[in-house]
Amino acid sequence: MSDTRINKLRLELRRGVLILSVLASSKVPQYGYSLRKQLSDAGIEIDEGTLYPLIRRLAEQELLDSEWKNTDGRERRYYLLSDKGHEVLGQLTEDWQQLNKSISALLEKA
Amino acid sequence: MELVDRYILAVKQALPSDKQDEIGRELKANILDEIDALNDQNANNGDAVNTVLNKYGHPDTTANRFYKRPALVAGIDMPLYKKVLIHAAAFLFAYAVVRTLLTMLQDDSINPFRLLFQPLYIFIDNASLLFLIVTLVFYYVGKSSSVSAWLYRNWSLDKLPPNPGFKINNSDTITDIITSSFLLLVLWTHLWMSDDAYQQQILALAPSAEHWRIILTVLSVQSLLQAFYRLTQTHWQRNSYIAYIVDHAVFAIAALWMATITPILIVKDAINANLPLVVLSFIDSSQSDFLLSVAAILLVLMYFQLKKLPNLK
Image 1: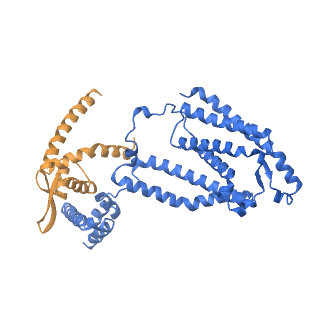
Image 2 (image 1 turned 135 degrees about the horizontal axis):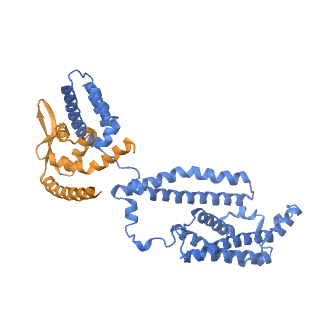
Image 3 (image 1 turned 90 degrees about the vertical axis):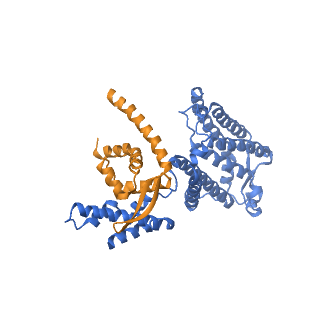
């Protein structure tokens, strides 16, 4: 299979998990780049063109609170997990763990 | 940083006005952070601005990532959209053909070039408006929810076609609509044609065949109703297929019957004298042959339809 096709499949596989990763990383205030850096350090590479719009969408869904702050002489928009976001993160974490268990069992059999 | 500002401005121009400042401000903060990070990683990299902006890509692409504009027709509605467009185009074409035939009937002239090109001209003239209307309807209805999801909300398994291999051919249905509509309009010319044009008509129904006006009207109306019903269906059902065969059978019988009692059409007295004898004789003698040919075609069609019937549930 071509690399392009494999990359597309990888992208599809990661898409849902990215939301979970972003929510989990937003328990402390994060701005766009700091969040990308944290995810990258954790081994989750995500390009800026995907991450920044995703954070905005999560904020529009009220899963993240946001405020503008001036730090190091530059204004940045900081995001923090909202109460609703905490609730959703709990549910998604449970789902993820259950799914992970099921898929691991399937992969062991294969 | 001038390049960054120009880039942000280009992105903002591709966004709705109420989103421009907010998204532009945030995008700028993110881009500046990315540039700083790249400069920190590689102090000699003087082209960090270009690298970061090239990675973001075309301003329209970036704008589209931040704000997804609703598509004119949602992907999920595309099959239905194509279906509606094809049906509407078929109706438009039927209208164009009937309108051309009626114009020619009024003018009492059969010009083959006009018959070929006028329907095409009428079709092209109206097709863009049709395309626009169908697309706008899908756009505005689809803004709140999916059009097909709304239309198919009451769908259940029992609505699956019982004969999936027997799709109704829409071009046959449209041909039936054109034929029946035209026959109805020809039968009742005196109701819609101007007095002058009507008086100039060469042919008229023979007084002894006047009752055929009613019989053919009834047959055409039921044929038209059947065709409109078929447009709402995708696949044949046994009953609708039997009705279709009966429709052909009835028309075949009518044609055979009329062939025995010709002339059905007569040349009007007022114009009689102006026509060459050979034309008069042709009109008189060819009617029965024409009707027999129509009956033969219908009977052949029926033969093939009857062969299919046992396979229909």
